[in-house]
Amino acid sequence: MVLALLLASTAVGAVPAPGGIGPVDAAMVLTMAAYGAPLSLATATVIGYRVLTVWIPLLPGALVLSALVHREVL
Image (cartoon, rainbow, N blue to C red):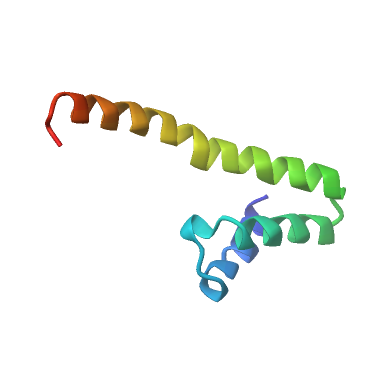
């Protein structure tokens, strides 16, 4: 997984996308598949990785932002 992420993160410079979502995901799946992982397992691993590192952290951030806006701090 670490090797796949290192190799795939070079795709961020080639294709500008917010957070590398899209090109990095595809490159990670292809890298893991090239090293012998089944395509379905590689895809599930990348989806799980993105959920844990991108989508779950958005929840507390959205709650804090909502509280700050409600208290008129922002």
